[in-house]
Length: 332
Image 1: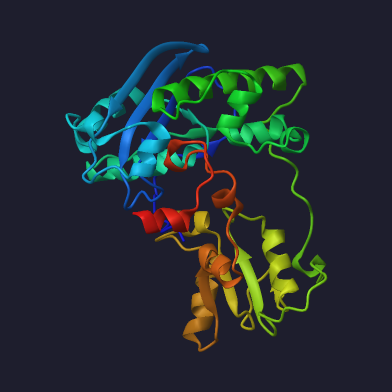
Image 2 (image 1 turned 30 degrees about the horizontal axis):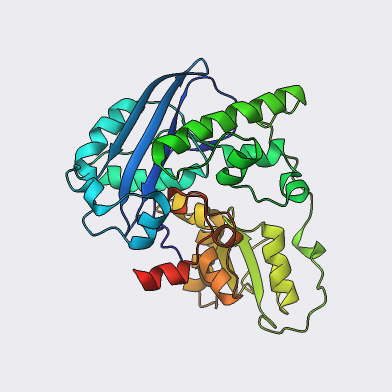
């Protein structure tokens, strides 16, 4: 599982239509910001919906580029041999970005990598960011069903006949802006306001009923969830628990066996704990058997591979392919 880091001052993921922003895309040597490195940064400054400036740089990693990464984006060790280190090129990128909203496709991947690298030079990347993959799901809710294609940048490039994806940072920035413009055009013509969050389905833990299964993995154990899960709706997670023989609750009690903390919530609240976490710790101090776990641990318990890892790896490596994470780790 991914080693989630604490990024307390990272900008917020927002959904809104903007005319001034900077498109950002990176190419990397792997999935993990804690271990892998940035090879390339591309950025396009947009003012009043028009491109006014561009930024591009390669950076030399500390270790050789894995061959399968070169196979994907064409970046070789020879190409970066005379490039500066990421620590040396970041100040120029930071100056170019300034305080702009960052726009991208699966932007959190790029932002997390950049945030961690910026921290190494004592700079915090606090820019808010827009993930147009989220917008695409609001504007084109039936895209996957109607086209048989997943919500991936490479599929949109092909579907809208923008061109052929090169898996290079600056090129992907251009395609990302083209997609943002197209989605805004469709949204306007269909009177869609994607900035308004969908109405939350009203339900309680008691509404989760066991479906057709005889698995008893969680027999006699009670789960409570807190925070936003990154890869699963809370209702879906609760359904897993109930189907596996456990019970779920909306509120923490001394009878709770597991408090599952959404990874995003866990990172955001590091040093500033949620009420449920504080309550769980109080019960634990009184001798109650409550386990506080993160969502990635929960996924391991139910042998669940997040669909984002299976299907929607557009910005894993900064490219639009489906990757086998275990195979990647073996090859590294």
